[in-house]
Image (cartoon, rainbow, N blue to C red; front, side):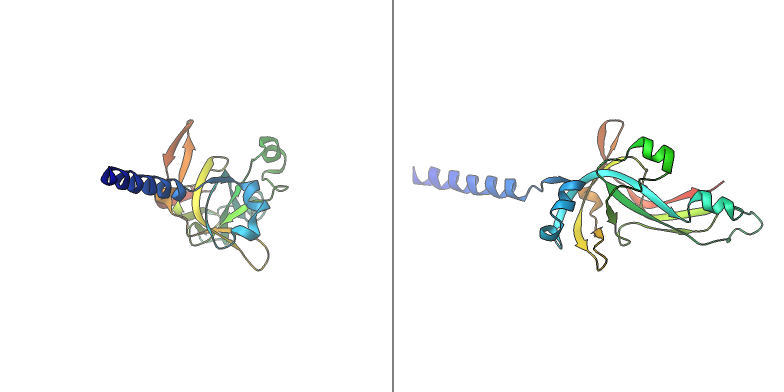
Length: 177
């Protein structure tokens, strides 16, 4: 009987440990509201992404756009921000979610650079407006900007055709007309 009780106790401890290690998924707004207590901690956060490009494609066109004779023309950077929700009307009228507060994906996990013809992003392929669930460490930088860094893609996922699928690491290019 003692042996059986000891065995059940070990199973109960393992079960509780497994349940306790499961990371709760937070929304972007929950992370923003609790940022100070989450700073420096690993979190799982879910939201929609937007790929910011500077200068914007509209601004690039104002400066002549991609000139095949000068493929290195202009310096373009890109970064990814995770939002609670991106309103399609905001994108239609403003081209970007300007009025939303979000969590920037740190350069160690997603980095973009290029010129007026092409932007190359390293880390993974990001699709603006798509729902993602990232596992990484939250940091508040000196400007009070929220950063999600050291993203573990093996513990992260994306919603594609109403199904959660893994995120593949890699590099992708975005061409500008």
